[in-house]
Image (cartoon, rainbow, N blue to C red; front, side):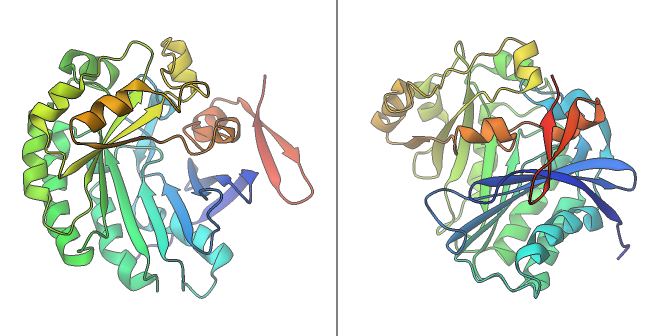
Amino acid sequence: MKKVIMELLGKYGKEDLAILYIAKQDDKIVEFVESLQPPIPREEKWVLVISTMYGCPVGCLMCDAGEYYHGKISTEGMLEEIDFMIKKRFPDGKIPIPKFKIQFARMGEPSLNKDVLEVLRLLPEKYEAPGLMPCLSTIAPNKGADFLDELIELKNHFYPNGNFQLQFSIHSTDQEEREKWMTTNIWNLGEIAKFGEKWYTKGDRKITLNFAVAEDSKINPEIVAHIFDPEKYWIKLTPINPTSKAMDNKLQSGITVENTEVFPLVKEFRKLGFSAAISIGEWEENDIGTNCGQFATQYTNGKVSIRESYTTTEYALSD
């Protein structure tokens, strides 16, 4: 396996919440994140979020990663992201954490990078991690169909009994709006549901249907209930994070600090039999940039400055 030389450029965040790392691999900028879910300690749950591409070719309206695309990250490059965070805390490669998630959800659409499949094959033998659970988030692009079919076999062989989490980022029940937000080259909801029937087996975790909710999003729970089985899917509602792209495209979040406890869509989905919840992590992560800030894009555009702290080199967005 080819060795990838990675140079850490800096990190930003808080040990008790989330840390975003920005690094250089073969002269390309990459970012990755480790995070906690307060008040749960790291000894019980630890989440790594890695990039699968240098930027992204899709260009979703709310995602800064799509401002440029410099190619796919290799198997070795993705493993280097993971290895850096693991070796920092567990030098022997033994991770005795009951909930240890590795999310393929930072920069890039993972189903457009076949090397993600190879990383998933290698993880169980590379680390001693009984709590390992990969999580993959996709918009279901047409060109990712073969990848997703192969992922079914891989999941059943390496991660059975609910040890894999799949998320479809669908954002709207209106296909025209979905294509405006993401790309015209995506599966419709019926095609996602058809795939879900092939994916889901008894004992699997429910498939996540994620909606990033804008103020004027078209989200009809009855359409979801008509297409998707509540026994096989659960609904995750997330805010529109304050990325540069979201602000440029005037996407205002429909989920705010003030309305998270009474957000009506949660109640509507639950009435139709779905498990549903608002997932926001911590609002403070918006300031750190770990929710969906894409520091790599800001760094590439020269909008990141360095400031020194007592413990680490931190990055902050310049004015």
